[in-house]
Amino acid sequence: MERMNDAEDLNLQQILSNLKLKRYFILKVVCIALVVGVVAALFVRKQYSASCLVFPQVSDGVEIGGTLGGLAAMAGVDLASSGNGSIPIELYQNIFNNVNFRKELLETKVTLSKFPTNVTLREYCLSPAYKRFLWYHKLKANTIGLISTMQRKKRLEERKAMMEKANQGEKALTYIGMTEAEYAAVYALGNIVSIAPILETYSVNISAKMPEPVAAAQVASAVEQLLQKYIIEFKTQKAKENFEFIQERFIEAEANYQDKRERLARFQDANKSFNSAVAQVRKTKLEEESTAAFEVYLSLTQQLEQARIAVKEKTPVFMILEPVAIPMEPVGMGRSMIVLIFIFLGFTFSLLLVVFKQSILEIFPNEKLIGWYEKEDRFFFSRKKNKQKETEY
Image 1 (cartoon, rainbow, N blue to C red):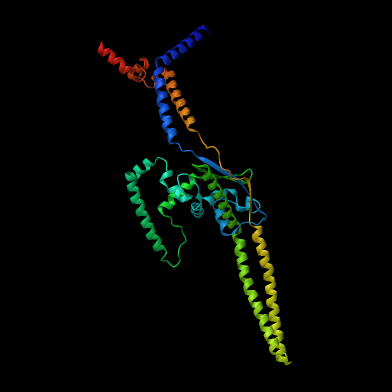
Image 2 (tube, helix red, strand yellow; image 1 turned 90 degrees about the vertical axis):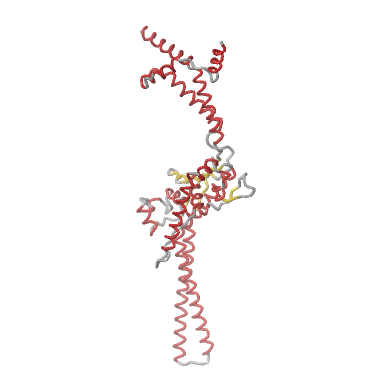
């Protein structure tokens, strides 16, 4: 027992001795980590996050089918199992990934201090004023990026030629073409907006990160409104198509009914003094045609009203559980916290390097490394000053 205590005391004394011998090395590493942490903190841009929590409500239980239902089933998504005939919240992210959705979102106006007037998200995403490490991007664009830019232009020209060739066929294809700038702006939205479905509460969290608080709130609010618009269009598309079809038939039936009424009225005015059998048969036929047209018109009137009600029933209502608010504090680590973390990492690394001396030497048995461990370090310029003093003597 005493031997174990003596061994522990000896190891503790050896560790303290090594720490005292290498105290300046530890201080050097901490100073270097401090400088690196300050540089890293200067390059970190403040980000403000604004979010809202949306709960979609529906009033119908219609099963979703058709082409969209088949495609969703092929993708492994059961639209019918989402409950209440609503869109599964897993698809909200798919809606955000829609190119048309993002291109429309890019036209949202935001307020930023580096611009004298409100600008669109497209201008923000492509503006050099808000690009991080701008010098690096310029250097890359003028050196390595030249080759990739030339290849990209070649691909765009080839794609344009193929698109023109495809449109010459009997049936033109439907696709969305984007320029290089549009693609860059659309891709940048993925780093700004985040949509997270919450399965437990069947709600969706929409958040946006921007370098300024007002802009973050504007983007989050725009995503919320645009998402509601797309979902309403998705949910009511079939009902609207049915309503438009019935409305067209209603207009035709109304015109036909009016025409039959006018023809009957003109015949009655022209044959007031005639009581022939032919006139009576003609009159009876016109009355029957007018009655049949009226019945069709009346039936379509009822169907039109039912279709109008169906559109309203299938229009989802969105309850905003947590509205968008302008953030007060930036998110993420502050600059002082980044510096402290670098100092802690530098101190921990140097401390472990000294404490586990024996283990390191067993893994890397090197004479220079052994000599470094045995030699006492000086603080930065102390060694040079000592050498100058030795030469003077």
